[in-house]
Structure formats: structure tokens, C-alpha cells
Image (cartoon, rainbow, N blue to C red; front, side, top):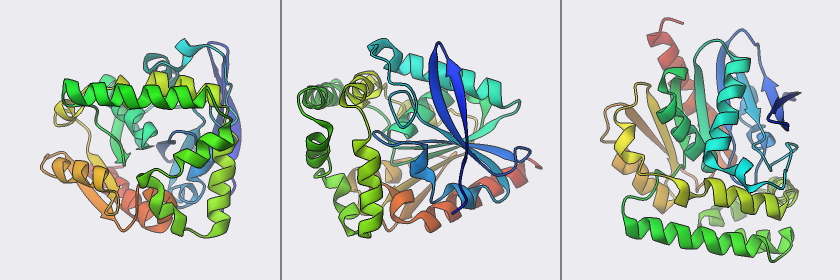
Length: 281
């Protein structure tokens, strides 16, 4: 496994840890991690993707080695998108391919909708598209509020003990113990207050119905889900009807790049190669 090169990015006094793999002159690919993760969650797929690309991942605010300010407004979706926009503008002079998992997928989708001319290709892994109805929005808001309350009332290990029992993580119990231990260490390294701010600012309740916008995006889109993840499998099946969306189903649960990194890297790499060939790069 090729080690990442580590650097830092600062915006509005907040420092973000950045990890890089590959040759800076190659096609840029930016990886956005999920809730309670960090850039290191991509370590099993980034080296493969970086064989002929420049791969970059960074820790979102409140995650990994990035700063954890005690300021809820810094965790709002608008602030997160602003930091991402400035980071991409500083690091890249051309369009980037954007890959996001779960929470990172929601952020990637929001960014692509807001600044479509800066994204050459979009890969969404097990990402929600937002509530379709007022009832769904109310349910998401209620669920996120319960999650915030729990994060602020118990220690991080107790919260993760409970969170890891969610059905979407059931398949991860089959992973090798060494890998499960690594994931566990990454999760409990987080600060519960920072995670609570994250849920408040970028939880699913904060989204609009992006399913109405995806068909109008100008870039090609790949949606990846696990066939054992019933909720996101349904999203993939619905998106398969859109002309600009390709859907891939892997024999995994929610976190496809964790459970089958080789298949994930192969599918994403093939998709990006196809788009690069079409663009003549």
C-alpha cells in the first residue's frame, strides 16, 4: 500500500489535512470521505486509482487531523462547500473528477449541482439524494436530532458501540478483524461534539431533493451501491433510468470501497478512463 503524502490547507483560520497519491500532472481525482471517517479511509483504493491519476483526499472539518472548532456555523453545508470550493481553486487549474462516499457523496453532489463547470466526472458511492416529501424531511430531521442528542450525552466509544449496530453496517462484521479494528480506531478518534455539529450542518435533513437535479448535470455520473444495502440499492435502481447516470452494484453492504476495494477501484478507474478517452485526455 503506497503511503500518502501529507500537506495542509487553511481557510478562514481552519486547517485541513490533505493526503495525496500519484503524479501531480495527471488527471485530478478528489475523494470525499464519509461521516466519522478521514482521508485515510481511502488508503486501500487511492494507490490503485493513482497509477495514472493524481488522487487527493482531505479530512473534513471536525474529522481526522483537521481542526475541530467549537463553532456550529463552520460545519454548515454552505461553509463546507465554500471550503471545498476554495481548496479546489487553489490546488487545481482544471476540472476535477469528484468521488464521494455517503456523507462525502452528499457533499460531492451538492458541489456538482452548485458548480457543475468545475467537475469533469462525478462518482457517488452509497449517497443519499435528499428527502422527496415533507414527511421524509421531517423523519430525517427527527432522526438527525436524536443522533445529535446522543453524541452530546455519551462518550465517543458508547456512541460508536450503538452506531455500529445500524443495519447498514451489518456486513462489515464479516470483515477481517484487523480491518474492523482499523475502522474502529478511526471512528473513536473523533470528537463527539464535532460530529454533532457535522450532523447538524450536513446531515440528510439539510439536503434538498437532488434527484430532481441529477438529470440536468452536464458531467457523466457513476452511482455505486452494494446489493446487500437495500436502501441505497433502491436509489441505484431508480437512477439507472437517467441517461447521464451509470449504475454499478457490488456484492457488498453500504461501504463498497471498504468491503471490496479491488472491485471499487476497478469500476471507478474504468469509468474515469472511459470519460478521459471521450474527452481526448
